[in-house]
Length: 491
Image (cartoon, rainbow, N blue to C red; front, side):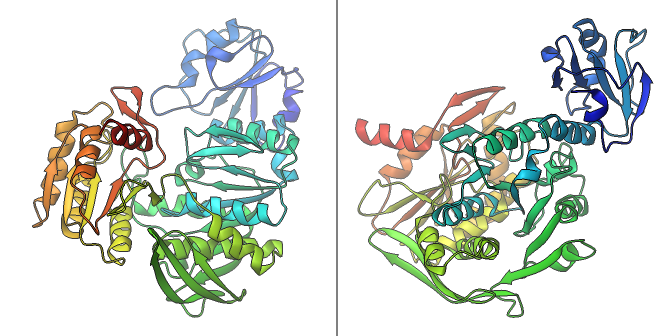
């Protein structure tokens, strides 16, 4: 493809060479540059692609895309290579990648879901409903990418723009009609979804999270990044109960719809909400009125499950799906690591959940309290190289809400596990909550199982769908389902 065609829609300056050059591949990893490549120099958190320009030119790159104002290597020799400058190479990569893969998003119905929590479960609910109605549906999210029968483990909630466009291209090739995807604030900030025309954009909720040196500078920045989704979608669907909903809707260019429980003026309202507890399962039931009229039963517990289901109903009604299909699909929808039951005993309930911040943990424990357990036992740790405030907050939440907290390791990364546990204890010691500390997560899980009492609900929080533990840059296999299975066999 000609470089000029790839640059269509971008504000660019040709520093040297010609945009009529033929491009054989598009790369943003300097090690992958080959004869005829276009190399896009990205300014990353840990390294700067501009440092490797001479190397990619020596490898035969036909062109390089650089960022205005970036520091270039001294004595850079560009005689054999076209050099094009753009204001932001991340934005440039998104549009170049879309052009390289022949704009696949234009051939799909794109659904983008953003919010602090609820994104993952909602995407699976939407996929379940749409597939039950006969649509071919692709999924891109925190856990995995699903293209037909192919499941690809995800490394980011929303992939880098080139990888995202490649997935969308593969979905078009596989006959996918609709794509439902999680859109993180980080992805919006870094332009990973730039240029994608979303049919529907969704706001689930927002609370302070992902704020820190490597993420968002403050809550306003976090909120403004999420709001970017609604400048590139046709219909925006918003949680009318969220305290920031008016700010999120203010000034957007899309048609707006709302759903809610407390907000009776929302376009879609859930009422007559009941907890369902029987045969070892926890669930919810509720009625829907407004833009849709149906009664729903879920095999997952909690008020947030009602919100997730309401979000899915609000989305899927745009595809004219029969109520019975929607009800059936919602009852079937399950997500790995999201309030996932694991059978251990007839006497008590054990669940695995991804709750890894104070807001999510509080929501989870509040939900489980509603089922009136004899004891609520919470096992969790906190990730290393993340905001320390999260540890204090999670310790305080569990100390206040659980009858027993088992403090253990999560992904310590480059930090000492005991130091993280000590931070959690600082939070829990503000409360009168009982706790034990067991640094090894396998031993902690064994302790939880061995000490389970009739009527208990035990939740293993933080890891969810993850099947590894990251220590000093290495990911070691650790799947809590496997740990439980192996321990029960050995016992």
